[in-house]
Every structure is written in C-alpha cells, then in structure tokens.
Length: 139
Image (cartoon, rainbow, N blue to C red; front, side):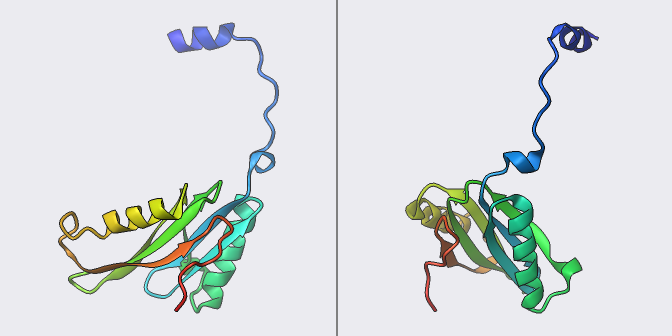
C-alpha cells in the first residue's frame, strides 16, 4: 500500500522510447549444443541475433536447436572457451562485453581453472573477438 501511495504522488513520466530505439550496437552469440554456433555484431539486438541464428543454421543446426546465449552492448572484447566434462559432454562458454583482451584472457583462465572445476577433463580458450567481432586467433 505504501508503494502505491508514493507512486501516486509522482508527477506523470514522459512516454518512453521503444526499446529498439534505445539499443546500441552489440554482439550476439548463439549455440546449438553439440551441433553448431553463430556470432554476429549488429546495430540492435534483433539484427545481431538474427545474423547469429543464420550462421548457426548454416553450420548445420536446425533453427529450433539454436539458442541465444549472449548479447552484449557495447560488444567489448569477447572470449569463447571449450569445456568438456569427464563424462564426455562438451560445450562452449562465452563472455562478452569485456574492456580489454587481457581481461578476456584472464576470464578464460579463471573459467578453465581445474581447481575450481575438477569435473572438466578439458578446457581451453578457443577464440577471442575484438569489439567489432573480428576473431583474433588464427587456426
């Protein structure tokens, strides 16, 4: 009741702009576990996610298997690690929006700390993306 009274006393707020109008460019990551993945930058969440979904499908997954895992705006630096559980299941973990590459590499090192994650038999940094989404590791 108290919250209602406080809100009732506030002057009317101006209409808010639609969320899409507030969106800044960013980066999206999509993953179809055990099948495919996608990454894209875009001017809005919808644009980046749609492009990342298309990349996931182009990699061999069905659209319904592609799951949005990350959206960061601003994109910042991103890291992608590969992790494998001792029972065989494997996956990728992505962290985006980081201020520097060095910070990203420290995050990846922490994510792969076997002392903290003893059930992993393998864990390694597989890709670093700059703020424009350009892969920094060559294979």
